[in-house]
Image 1 (cartoon, rainbow, N blue to C red):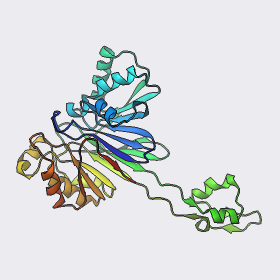
Image 2 (image 1 turned 180 degrees about the vertical axis):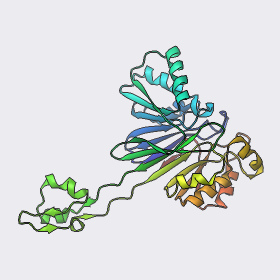
Image 3 (image 1 turned 45 degrees about the vertical axis):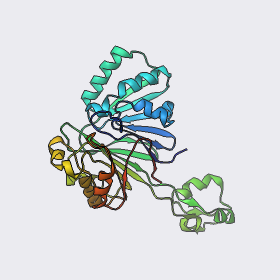
Image 4 (image 1 turned 30 degrees about the vertical axis):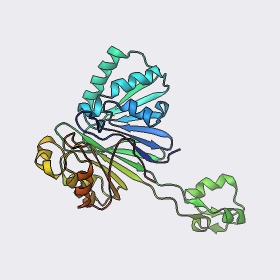
Length: 304
């Protein structure tokens, strides 16, 4: 079981090519799958990477351009044929929910699972939360309304010291409170400080996904301090003049955002099909920021 892993299903832009598939990632968080964007071929990439359809519970759509959205109807149809149970929540804009509802009504009227829509807007907001994970949106700067997503682990419980638990003969019913930071009061009233009974928890990890966006320093504020940042890098320096007018960034600009935000690692992607190698993206970004990965399909990145 993956504790917190990013699976790259597609890292190309605009259209499929012989080198890259359109945008799609799957977060594997404690055996639950969260998909980010869903370009064409997403379901085939899931099969190739042995990601089980039955574990997919949420899909997050950054914006309504085809290379981030058009894989959804086929994926949902396949999920219905596989008789997936339970529910699937799709986080998208109002127009995306309308379009997809109409497609499903025409081509896949009966599903074995409930499709839920959570309507998002281009602002900073918490859109998903459970006992261990929070997902937030933040605005991006593209030609249509667009958001990024930040996945943040909640603070983890402290580690119990088995020797101390045994020494003070602490009952099992008190252990969860102690893991959460409580002191232990012995039957005679003596207080045993939590620091004697536990050690520090494992650090919590965060991941931010910046879909299509032109360079804007405001993005750095919204992803500040994340452990790993994915930021689109459609162009290298040789086509830098095309980036902003088309609502995109260069690899160098992505690295400048990573540096300004103080992130731990930068992942590049959303490459233009004009390039026959990803080498320029990683090289130019590395001149601005030291810890860079050029994404490619099939890559699995463990965040812990």
